Image 1: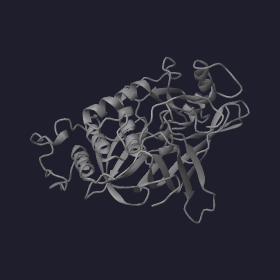
Image 2 (image 1 turned 90 degrees about the vertical axis):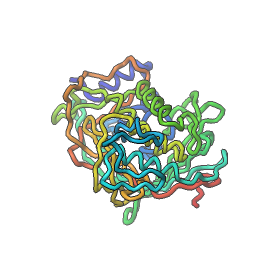
Image 3 (image 1 turned 45 degrees about the horizontal axis):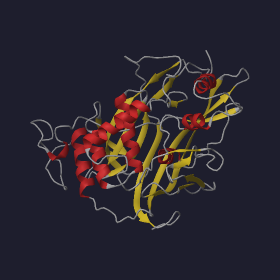
Image 4 (image 1 turned 135 degrees about the horizontal axis):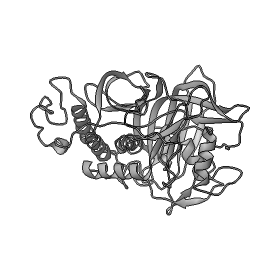
Length: 401
């Protein structure tokens, strides 16, 4: 069977002519791993600080291990504050300070989280300002290396973190942002800085690894504190994330044994991709109306469960709404008393291929695609953890409140 790189080379060849390095768009998609669509802020939310310059012909290829998405349940009938039918949400008091009389399920947790977001004060923000996001992250990475026969083999797994991540994103999405990530003491590694191109006059650099030398492409601003293209109602946001899922599919490689070459790929379901997209929205746009809509929309995606006694990257205990597919459990973590959103975890899970269609390579008919490349994680293994510590509005990149 062809190696991972061969599969990717064939996949890339169908999208762009062969050249010494893979096309910038191809590098961009592959290095985004399983977590990131091709848009700019999304790269920051889960790849902040990662240096993306690389070539398919290099003797060693570093690839992001795994990651993915979030949320959901079936909250359609109680979204928007409508009364829940008997047996669904009847044990939750209405209002911003809602307190469950019995331990809530996934739908109630998401409803309570939406109520908390709706009651949050809107920060005064001008278009030329920036959202400052202070967070902690823990990330697992796997080195994929070529052996003498050109086959891909999995190298060592390293866990980075906790990493203090400070991010500045444009309020209206038109100005350049920045991510600074540094390891907590006693680590002595120098902080990494990642530039984020804003969408200025409808154009931005094609990749984040070489913004000065890659061609500019058409773009739509992605505001960090305005609705932008993201609707502020649950039904509209739900339709939006499913449209993204259809346009930007995600594929997961299936282990092929000790050699490390995949024996095939499976495509994530539209539900899981929509769930993932909602998680990305929560990390990128902190406007209370957007976050409220995101929680309510998440409640309309089938397959979510509640999980208690879950910790975020800062060690804070919470309750999580989860969705599991293709060997990864996505967790949205909330404060168990106030239901404030705390962060996002991705944890290894059993790889259940029941009903899944395993194909030799991803569908080439799609113009864009994400590929989760690497060995499937062991159940319970931390792939990614984050903790949202603070958000604020500042006047310029690099400024701390």
